[in-house]
Image (cartoon, rainbow, N blue to C red):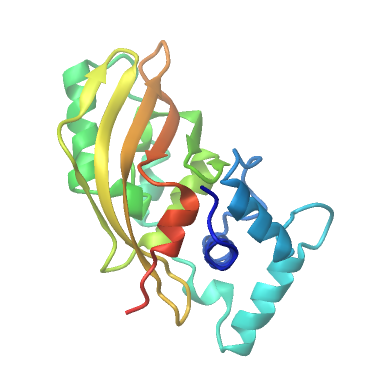
Length: 225
């Protein structure tokens, strides 16, 4: 069932603002396809990205500046630890046990799905990161995730064990998220499954989030208190 127009419009606005704040918009690959209602709402908002000078970007930047904010003012810096990881020697052909141990550390200690602080040596530099909204490069995902969710409220946890084999890994997750959007700070719960695909050398070549609920329902579940 398609979302009601106002719900879809609210979801589209929240999505547009979140992408703008995190720097995801304009730098990601082609959208994989949200619900028809959300696509329609984003089109009604003038969020289509055709041509130069996205009207959504101009509108949001003007709105934030008028409210006393700038995008640079709340853009998180990528930590020194995260930067150092980009120079790590790749962990090629490690055992499934070691792979699982490092992945668990990223989940439990690093909270990587809400901080962007992953163990980069586990990933192929050409790895693609896909959620229910879009597909991103490694750098874009790390930087954008840190900007979007790194705060005292946002956190993730495992919902069961991590399943690992030579071809990849899967696990279910639970998240409570707060978007770093000025003034609003919307909070949403999110559950789903993460699917990681490994190449012939054991490095992760694909990251794929599968959410338990459609995009519009996740975004319209946002609370502001």
